[in-house]
Amino acid sequence: MGKKRGADNVLQFRRRRSRSGPMSRRAKTGLSTAMIVGVGLIAGGGLGLTLSNWLPSGWTGFANNTAAANTTPSLCVANVHDGDTIRTCAGERVRIENIDAPEMPGSPKCEDPRRNGWCDYALAERSRDELASFLAGGSVTISRDGTDRYGRTLARLSVNGRDAGDHLVSMGLARVWR
Image 1 (tube, rainbow, N blue to C red):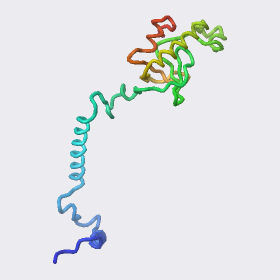
Image 2 (image 1 turned 90 degrees about the vertical axis):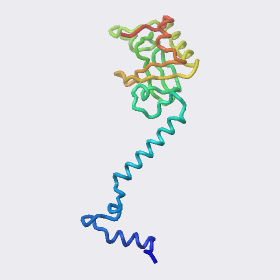
Image 3 (image 1 turned 180 degrees about the horizontal axis):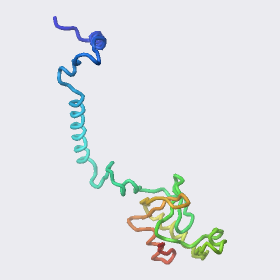
Image 4 (image 1 turned 90 degrees about the horizontal axis):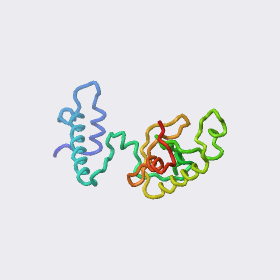
């Protein structure tokens, strides 16, 4: 009869093997770690090709694309603070970049004459209400671009491909920030 195979042989093999001694049985049979890793990479590549054919077109997946990494497909807006600042359902404060909207009543920028705030309160309320209405009009997309000195996320918001900042500027409810 041939050799007995089973758990006893595995234990005997482990006891006999020496790390600094001669080649192990796996090395003698040609199954090196490099070969095992190579086979795994080839199999993984085949799986990737299969998934790319199966997934819907336009899906970016896990590609290293900073624009895709900073863009969220649908954003939950919890609160519109004013015409250029919102809070997400996750608690993130977001400042719409490249626009400036009028300050709301009670803003420190309007109470301190040295701070040059745009203090048209009626226009500020209209701007806030229009932004809330605009964001409620569909799926909100956010494209993040850093933070400001107050720790808010600077970002562009859009609904159905229309930029929120451009919309407010076109209505005279905000101005371009330079």
